Length: 306
Length: 285
Image: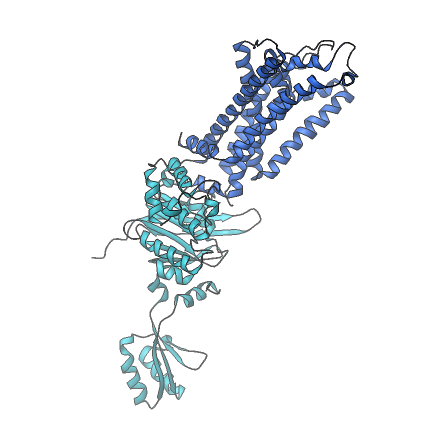
């Protein structure tokens, strides 16, 4: 018996945001984030990711549609109690130390102040905790933001482009941290325009383009099945054999004259044998897996932010 | 309560808040007492030119003595101190937009109106500290002036002092909420302070100031519904300090009850406007 699909912790129906100047930032979004997963919200710059996340924490009111986040209306105390979020750059009080900023958050959330040290420890900021926020590097600010989001031990973390502006080492550190945080029961919804990052961190992905949802699934589901690339001469003979073996609808001629064949890769040796038996000279035969970048470009028609 | 404690924590640790509070207290001591006392003690006789015969600058010293410290504080610092209160109101709200911390605050636990209530509560506490500080510094300074001049240390009654504190709290409360509302409206500090000061100087200062003199009584009838005029009526309701040789000042145009009612209405209106804006407006920065 198939295992039941986990209950969504985020569920939106037709979520839409229009701005007064005629801009449709988000258009009829149906988003489902399941409990316990690390969900990547992927899209090029300006696709509507941040607007969506702002609606999920109640900073922006949708023009139409509805959303339920952690069992309650976004932005309500019941929802906020279970959600930790960083929207765009983490913002704190520059005249307060990292520790005092988190102490403030603990006061506002009604959690014991001792949670501050635990959260600072989780993001490895303890040695700098007494320094003013204004003296922190971008990476430290980002980590303090994550610590603030963790203070109330939320069921869900919403992180908006958490590696933006970080140096390569900072990006690696934050990615590893997110993977670590996503282990166990906690849900992480992370937005990004960086494919590699999403591929490394996320179990499922939703792709948004011009405010519309264009795809959702696991990375494997989005990539689809691998194909077989065949180069053989004469081409007419090869086309005839491949169509016979895989069906004409599954054979595509590529611009360089080779063929892309959708077929079970276990049949590779058999197809090679048929081509040779038909008198074709096979010069290339290999399995080709679509990269997430290919999928992204296909879906959004943009460069993949790489 | 969480929001109030959080806001007090932020305000208490913010250097700019203390600069504002201590700046006003320093002004009360220097501009309100030290400089006038020096001028009135050491000025040459020629500086009495323009005063009625027999009146000297030293006669003005009566304003510096303890018996007059409540009236003097209200009449001298209702508007000047109000500007500091305006800045405090702007700072507490406007900086949240400048730093982008509005979104941090609104994504913690409580709703926006609860957060606003916490901020207004913290602002009230800061303004009360400011008012008590102004009265304390004025009392101490007037005591020093009286001791230096060998005058009596008679203070006004407790009831008048408490009424004075209440009046200045209402006046500064109006100013600070005016600042908070402007900062909420414009989502920044600079424009809020600029427009707040421009309103005080241009609308109530220049237009009503000159208009009242040139155009007659109907301007005063309009002015009596404007807030800064009412801070003046309220301050003046404590009575003018009588100076030897100078005619008594005219009674204020409106009484204290009118002034309190108008100022309280403005305070309530600012609270409602801020709440409506915060509740309805998207946080996009």
